[in-house]
Length: 294
Image (cartoon, rainbow, N blue to C red; front, side, top):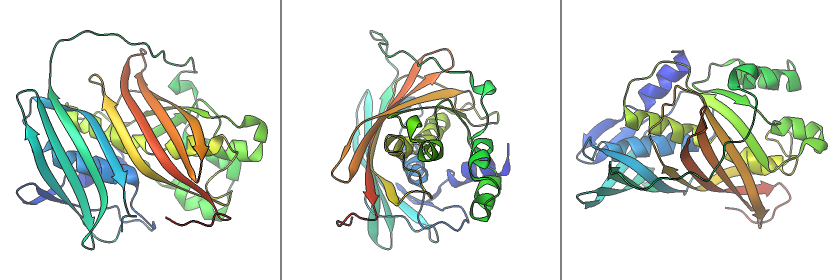
């Protein structure tokens, strides 16, 4: 387990300061705002600690309200909306500077037998092990540029490998523009057999590339184009158990963009083709020429 993954696991071990009140922190990095996937993952941890062990999260719906301040802790207040025989429903509010920065509703379900089908088919892409790591691809695009050297050399908790063009590649070659992205990812360590941990780590990774999928359709790239992109809302459905330390293919597409916003949706498949997670996100997509401000 590399240091970045150890740090992430530590960030997810929230401090309980009162009944249904938890406190989380952010990495010690020079970033302007807290990564949205981190807030979503920590909120899900807080909710999970208030439900029985025989319940697993099956869905979450979240809104990113304000940018998070990475220099101070985040307080997570959990409200117990319902404790039923089959379902538990929680509402989680993330607070900084006395204001809400994020809110989430999450539902947990006891295991039940039921009808089953899967209509979604995993895209045919090269196997993960045959593809280069994200950092190696980016180094090939930006070279040894000083402004990217530290960012590309730092350890990452997630091993991501693209089976489709990067936004930087489409920026340099508009012929590669596409409204679809396929990314293999896994946490490169043997993780504990804790179902909530694997779900939380999938939630953390789910926010990395959805905005990029919208920008890929327009040949835009962070750091290269005059574009600002950030998550507005985020929804996930967890269909069956999976492990985040095994390869998962994150197949994403952007069906629409307009009015300063863009929609992206994704499906996570195991290497054997089982659909395990569905994701939908709307994001802010704004160029420097835009007049309106969030």
